[in-house]
Amino acid sequence: MGRRLKPEEIIANLREVEVRLARGETAAQAARSIGVTEQTYYRWRKEYGGLQVGQAKRMKEIEKENARLRRAVSDLTLDNQILQEVVRGKY
Image (cartoon, rainbow, N blue to C red; front, side):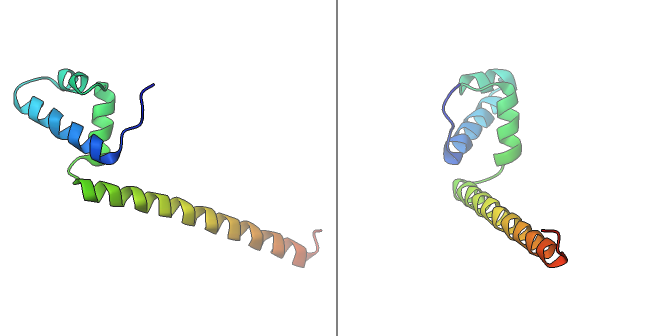
């Protein structure tokens, strides 16, 4: 298993594949030339297609913040449920 690429590296690879596709290579050949499978290329294109490097970095930051906030809401919801059970006398 290879190392995980940064969003800016993925975007650069996608641009290289697009150039190769414009030259007439197949998607499979172009994907192999950057060292990934055709499936990985399509997954990257779905996630990063049309993005610029700055936008990709911001997207990753927002995803991390979103995950942090989801955990916080989950913890608060659990605390609230525990307190409601205590008030009802279930403990």
